[in-house]
Length: 192
Image (cartoon, rainbow, N blue to C red; front, side, top):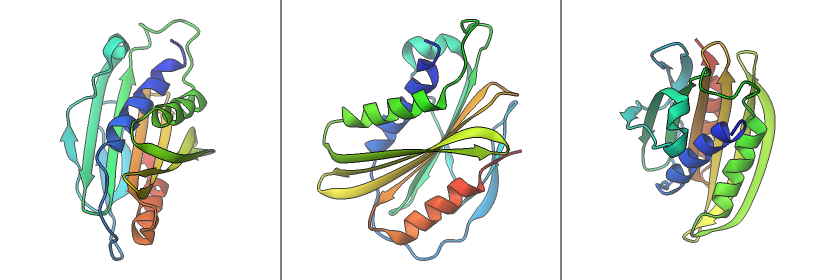
């Protein structure tokens, strides 16, 4: 269980995110700074449009380890953004449990590898930081329905609030404007 919690939550989120898709290119986009999160952990992020709250993802057997889950999502015809925060009940976790962003990234790749209709999957992982906290950038390129797509995910664990944050962007690989916007969104993330 110890490393599977983060891996499964990222994998489930990305699998759901994969099913939605994106549209065509956009022009230069102005980003507005927004604070997301309610209890314990909050992030500041720059977004091109408002995100709506969405229902929590059914975590199945993992539900007993979660004290709070917040989901936000939004899209236009070119770019889709999803943000999820999951607070972990540390008292319910095994004593030796430590969050593993590397295991989470591997689970994302495995989830996409097994997803129906996905071909030409390429993945990369990069260690980075968010407000001094270890973070993982996950990049997936793939083909679905004869369209090349790119998904970039940023995952990090706020150990002060026992909260896993996942920020995802998805767009057509050929859409340079959305790619730049997505990079700016992910680079703007900081703990509040």
